[in-house]
Length: 481
Image (tube, rainbow, N blue to C red; front, top):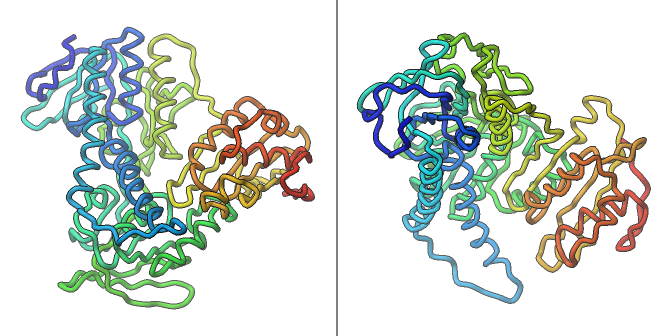
């Protein structure tokens, strides 16, 4: 098996391998690298040149790089007693900085592939039989014969029917290229992607309108977590239209004319650009899965068992294509299971919770049981909420509008779920994930000494509320859900 040389597809006409991985996103390259570490000969196929998939090249990493820029701009203008001139923005330099971060990380992945002897093939892969894959590359096609396969083909942005093909209508991928900072930007979709992109473009000078068809931003999160963010955005953005849908778009020389319809009636506005952020669709229907006998449902999802095995015993699937939540950290854990099973290990995907994070300002993170889910499933719980006004770190850093909450089983006293809104919520939620995975109760969190003053104390203080031992505020009555 030849090692990866970075050569174009034409250099690899026909290959035989023990394992082919279709897709080089976080799940795909993790599976390839883990299987190689366990002794398998691996070919990694991806349509893009750089490894890393959408997450590294067009999603998680560039968005977090730009969100950091946005955060610095906002925080510099919010310091008490410190006054800065209005920032001078060099969009070309901001874009180049983002691209340097991506390039640094993709170079690292390419080096890891070479060091592990993983053969990387660039091109669009489609199954041609139960044991073969054809890859159409930039200059030629190639056939890969495999003993095992892992499908990690990811997902694509959902398009809205009837919206004209116009460069001023963006999805998350094109928006992260920063083609232009519009005077007025309409964002269709108030989920994580839409809100993160709104934060970036707002900091760079655009006037933002958000349209969300549900009655709440971040519809999957509990209302008390969303409220502090919603209050901040209402003060910053031009409009936030809940319970509203976009029904008509007309492209003109002066902009994009849009008709919005909601509870308050219909309005028409003109925007310089529109960002469509209404979700992602799995790519399962684009890989010729039927030629291998792999079952794909009407939405493009591929069903798998706890070992990530499809209905074809030697073909596995991971990541966005196997179902919600479409998150990189889920894909990487599924990848380790699939690679391990192929290499003879007795492994199963058995995560008790998969955390979600919105990297907004403030950040919102949750894991385990939510109050929304508890109501839908009629699950009893007790809720203990620690307002960040009780946190010295939060008050001193201007984050007193945050909160940390725990949901506790009223009988077993085990932690069922947790939610955090405030600075670094995405980092803080990991402690709650570990607590749930280890069947911890509030006493375990409360008795673990947390450093002071830190945001991490808020989890311990919420646990003290549950234990009735808190001294930083009066212990409230228990709230039963």
